[in-house]
Length: 307
Image 1 (cartoon, helix red, strand yellow):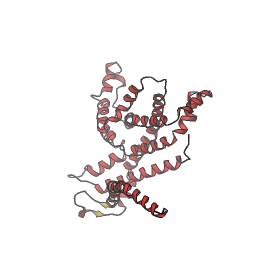
Image 2 (cartoon, helix red, strand yellow; image 1 turned 30 degrees about the horizontal axis):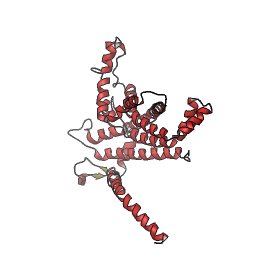
Image 3 (spheres, one colour; image 1 turned 60 degrees about the horizontal axis):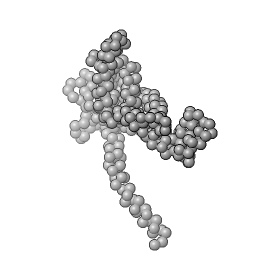
């Protein structure tokens, strides 16, 4: 067997192993994406596609002139940035603590922090809706029980407070996943590097800044991309906490997409679905996810550190 035939055979084997993954990716992502792009060019109520009206970029023009689309994008970006700062600050803190040899009870704290992530988004939304409900909520009830009833508020009835709680709940829910991801990253760093830094007299903060953090760069890059995608497709928590209210002020793209696609517009007689316009918002969301991931990879691209 010559070198050329060997290379052909190896390429054939690679293709055989990659083919199932490529087919699944094409069927479950590329095909729906192309279909969504097509539907976004039509005014369609979702019944019979033969009744759809081709309007070109009309849905996109309407979306970019829709103030609630911009409100939803702003809220998504707020979750991504402020939520991301909180998420990774606490995830790093917990990951470093749980990999410290002197820290006791690691298994217990790891389980407690990770437990919320095991609950579905629906369960998380329902739980915190019960806690924050202004009439029967656990938080207001507790405040009144301890004599602090004056602090009780309609936590989800004020836009700024509601967005603050949404960000808190999203971070509370996901922090365990990112903590374990970073714990795995820290455990790949040879212990000899930490020992050498301690021998040289480095403090805990210096070890974190000059050893742990640089060698976690690749893990942080992957985690950040995962967070960008998660923040942009936030749905269940917002839907069950506020439903996009009050007055549409806490909508994110996914909840507003659901509202315009499946809910009856104010003043309409009977059920009126706007699947074409809803799909347009989904396409905008898809573009933001791709752009956000590409921009972050571009900004964080650097040579991998070796140890």
